[in-house]
Image 1: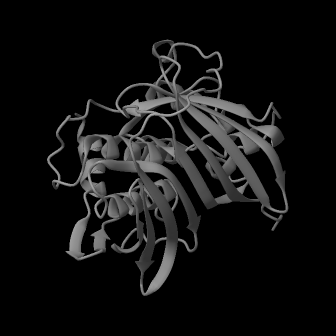
Image 2: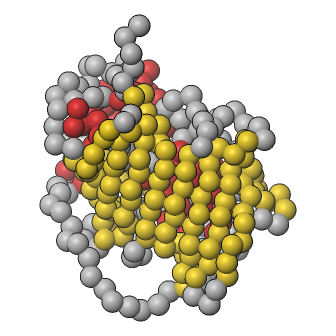
Length: 299
């Protein structure tokens, strides 16, 4: 396991303050605010630690309310909304400096058999044939070296490989609003993580996928307009809301294909939707996110 991945696991291992209240630490992201995927994953950890071990998340719905301060801890309060025979519902509010910065509702289900079908996995190259971030990013001459360094540092725990150039890679060239990324953790995960007893191994993988899901989903919005985003300073963006549905088992330390597209952008907002497949073609997760997409006014 890489040191960066161990640091990410430590970040997700929340401190229990008292019943239904947890505290998490923060770290700087590529921009001077808390990374949204971190808050979403930590909130899901908090919810999961109040749920019986035989139930795993099947969906989450979240709102990003305020910019998070990376220099301050985040307190997560869990509301036990419902405990049924098959489903468990939790609501989590993340608070900093006395104000809510994030709200999440999650539903957990006890495994059961049922009808089974899925959309087929789209064509994609073998991830082993694609350049790593360390190989690809230095090739983009339009990126400041400091931006490259911040991107590599922020994603050090994840091996994330674009099938095609990211938005800032072919800046100024509108493309189809679709992007594909392969990802997995940068190192193998223990099947028995040394965290508390209610942290089941499948929950760990779901929380890590939640963390990664906020990294690239809105790229497809930028592609449609030939914009590079924050990396080149031509768009100011931030996540507004985020929803995920977990369909089938997967491991976050094995390759997952993040197939993303944007059906629309308007009113200073852009919408991204995606499916995440295992390398053998099983549809594991569906994701939808809307984010702020503002073009800076000329000074």
